[in-house]
Amino acid sequence: MAEATSILPLRLTSVTLQARGQTLIDGISADLQAAGRSLILGPNGAGKSLLLRLCHGLLRPTAGRIDWAGGNGERVRRRQAMVFQDPVLLRRSAAANIRYPLHLRGIPRGERQAAVDEALAHAGLGAVADRPARVLSGGEQQRLAIARAWVTRPEVLFLDEPTSNLDPAATRAIEELILAVARAGTKIVMTTHDLGQARRLADEILFLHHGRLLERTAAADFFAAPRTAEAAAFLKGDLLC
Ligand SMILES: Nc1ncnc2c1ncn2[C@@H]1O[C@H](COP(=O)(O)OP(=O)(O)OP(=O)(O)O)[C@@H](O)[C@H]1O
Ligand SMILES: [Mg+2]
Image (cartoon, rainbow, N blue to C red):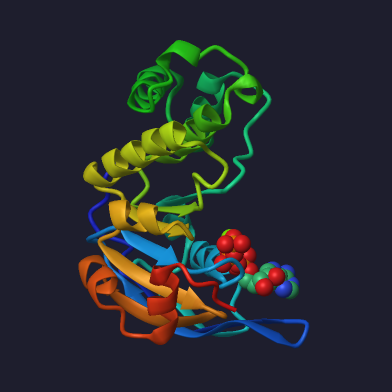
């Protein structure tokens, strides 16, 4: 399913989102390059989820532009996927959930099973393949959501706080899966408010506060020497308001 021309970088130009007289996303400009895992970090209400939804095309900016290098058509939509904080799974087996996007893409029936099996094994879900998705544990459901998003080998995977409801062991399994997906060549753009997670996963940090992009820095530099008082306070564990 590899295609010659990349849809990246993704360019945000003065992206703004207003609703009910409030500015929720405030003039964000940034290029998201193909290389590196980009973590959007910030306190609750900073605008992380909204920014991710804007990038994925689920919301339209009220001002500014979002441009993919590959254009803005069907091909760009097909080459990206998103995983939500609370995954929405089909009332079918785990395997059927993964098979479904392959069906939608018109992958021939005979080729689907091998791809499903590989995705299940990759996510450590081989043993629960035939169980209804809705009876899986929270961690298994989230791994299934990632496996389903990954089975079409998107060029970009957006993840919105995929571990916020999970315990440390389930979180570790998800983080390992995300790293494996990244190693296999998919660009990761992910939100978190968890500093430890950002340290473990990020190549670069986009630090958001009150809808504004306060810093966009290589992860090592961000954690060693944040450039804004807000980021320094966040790193110290102070409550930001
Ligand atoms: N449709 C909407 N209309 C008005 N305000 C909204 C809407 N959607 C989100 N907001 C507000 O925008 C702000 C940013 O929301 P967002 O969900 O992006 O925050 P977040 O950084 O993802 O927070 P969290 O860490 O809690 O997930 C919040 O103050 C929220 O209440
Ligand atoms: Mg959020």
